Image 1: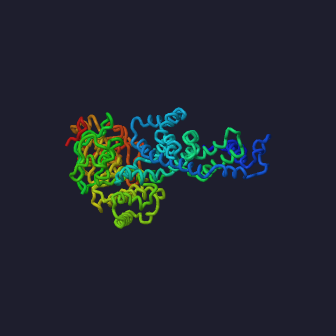
Image 2: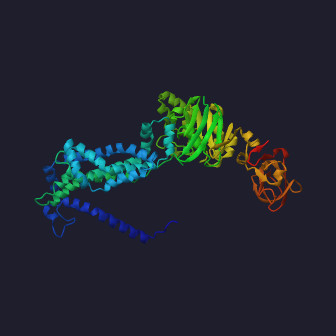
Image 3: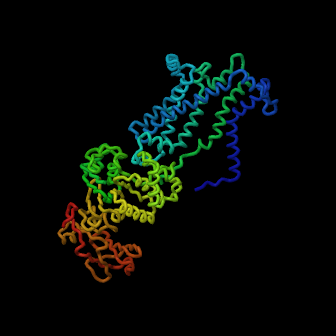
Length: 276
Length: 334
């Protein structure tokens, strides 16, 4: 039975939804607003909201003081690289778990996910030493590998869930049609799971983009991504809120824009027409 | 060519034996139907032939060659699935082309075969559509098209019509039979519907719990079922079984008489009963007769216009030469 919703109820719900939405968005909004203030206005009490002298000075100083493009390039390479590598490793893994599960498949999945519950700092020391030994410290390749590994459980889990939705008969049909395992994955499974793979890629780019623990600890200058760019503005000589906000805004802008445009893709489910 | 031989083929899942040692020969060009109730192992048997399941023992030969451990694609068989199993992201043309693409057939030949298959299956206007834009019947035809273009040595059908509505099912049944006549390729067809089995098959294999109960032409099975199970499974409505004194008169543990081999009369006959539910099909009426003292319910086929109603007394007379006799083991007595 459909639930009846009164106009008043609808209005209240809408108001609550907007309130919650704004509450979640407020820190980002405040950061963006602060980035257009002078340092004085940024720490003014009571705080000024919209009526201040808007200025682009902070952006100019930030751009002058540090090379934003280099950080951005590093972020793009690290986020995209670790995601692509993760997907390449995870597709065969998720395929085998979804279509030829063993008795312990569920346990393995749980175990993989449980590694996400481990505090990262617990393995910082061994990984740091390993990075020194392998010469990976402050290298983009090193960060790609580490971020791929820490996000791999989520990638495998997500792909596994999407693959489970694909009827096994279609893959059997491909096998009957002469497709090798490789062709089965390339021509049948992957295209059918495109919406799922796309959502997984987007989510993992966001996770990798925002990852701060490893990117801060394993980089110095060369491979430093935007997280390090933000951190470099919270200096011990005192906080410069407006400049920090400008740096933060520049760091989150690309991912925010990407998220905005890919909303549909993130939400879109799997649509199948082949199986009744 | 498409001669398939199963020698002592067995299949077990863990401790459960689904198919005890089974022997069967399917001749080249035959239309063989595996029929049986749900869970009788007919689909498993088909999947063993296809290579989608590994046998637990025994040997499968295709055209004399040992195919037991061959990959599905290497067996030169094509399969049509119950769910159609089309590739939803490909157009009809690409779906049909897929097995040829995998086989590395050149583009010109691919196009030629696609056009031919599309023409034969009335799909020419739909080649650029995706499966999601087609009706159930059209999807099933695409699945058949995809099977045809491979020019396999045998076709395997796994309950291909069970997702279609009744009218479409009759049409597709005819189309598949026509196709078999035209291609003269071996077809192995799995169904739980004995009407499909009777109308399409050259040879029916009746299965129960993984065991072959009888192999024969539809009319062989209808006229001389080897045991009570086959007698009850083949024919619609079901054969009436009578045990006790009446069976003893025929020196049997049980006798069977089909509804169409009984005549009903309001005035006189061999067995007396009371009319229960009547099913009017137009051309025929099936009377369910109670209180005969022979079996709980006896079903009898009478003409479309029959004057007896619920609660009326009716007399039934069997055709003497159409009575089937079975012993205590349920086996046929000649």
